[in-house]
Length: 304
Image 1 (tube, rainbow, N blue to C red):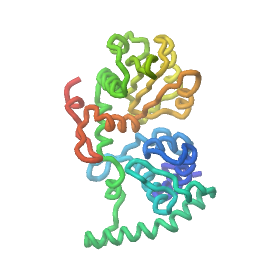
Image 2: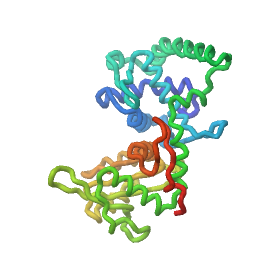
Image 3: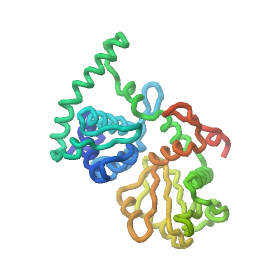
Image 4: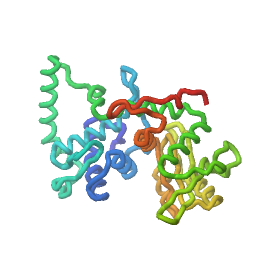
């Protein structure tokens, strides 16, 4: 089989349709597009593990994620074909037609394109009339309807933080997630026993659990591997932490994901793509300008 990154755009979209349907069946028929995207990458070994941080720069200097382009258009095609529906922004749901589909990958893409391509052609014709132009919609122009343009600059800003400031940032994020941060553990760059933060969270009305935090500001081309997970679990043992949160600007290998789920204490993994979504959700050192745009605050501009 051709490697996913060597496929043309339409073949990538066709390839993704079946995994999207299968994953939605697996999780009960509904998911956020972010969770669905990460789950498909984890499941499909033909897709590079770090594809969710493989940004490109367009001719006008805008950073974008080609995989999101293919993924979102695959979803749009499935919606046009009646396999999925989108009840609200960021959520996709399997329809009865999608739930009942049991054919092959090729059969699915053929069925979908037979319905969706005429609809795309109609949209293109309508766009030509509005613009009074014979130029078809380009990939980069179409991308603005699907890809959040703020993600590339935010990822760059995170990568430009010093290691210490990135750890501070991650502790602030975890604090937003209702973890009471301990100011005496994991706040020093050296001598903290392999953790970059530590805190406590109430799991019910009377029980408090210990949470260890690991922060890796890594280049997106270098995925976090399973030995890093094992090392972090050893640090969790030292501090008797019941939970672990591993945050990176990069991605996790499939072996690392498996390692995080092994044993009695599951480690929550937050990769670069998920990290950007959480920053937007909690508006941590970013300011929301419009529905899908965020302006970076001074935290990223001040000296470390």
